[in-house]
Length: 159
Ligand code: PNS
Image (cartoon, rainbow, N blue to C red):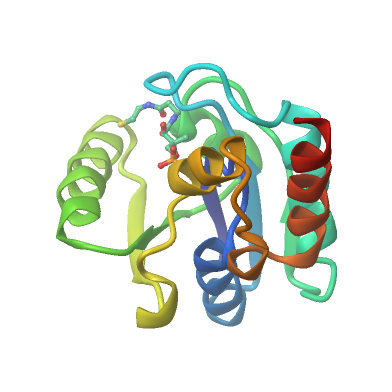
């Protein structure tokens, strides 16, 4: 079974990596797909930067591939031949949102979504907070994989 893990990943953090690591053991193939969230404007990192950071962060995981997409997750999953969408769950708030998207995606195409809880020690991490703290000069390097920490340090130097 091939699974797809879509997200904004702006930037990828250790909570995302938990989900990727767990899902990579459950499915034969896992495609991580950076996409645009239509409800989030002005990303911190470009599409190419987000793709590169994920590629470098998952290179130790043989069953994982990284492919960017534009548009709908269901169309991307169909193009990939993925039978399942994987999403991470940090909190009850995530559950509400993810259940609604899972129901929508299932009702339109019949594709199932598997919701994986993140580890408790990473459940507080959110890309939006990493962006906010980095923009004001704070250090979030302990919350992200090393390739992302290097790009965040670059952003800090450019301030
Ligand atoms: O990391 P995020 O921001 O929670 O990821 C959200 C993402 C990109 C998976 C979501 O915005 C999304 O599904 N975008 C593609 C557009 C789409 O498929 N919309 C229909 C949702 S039911």
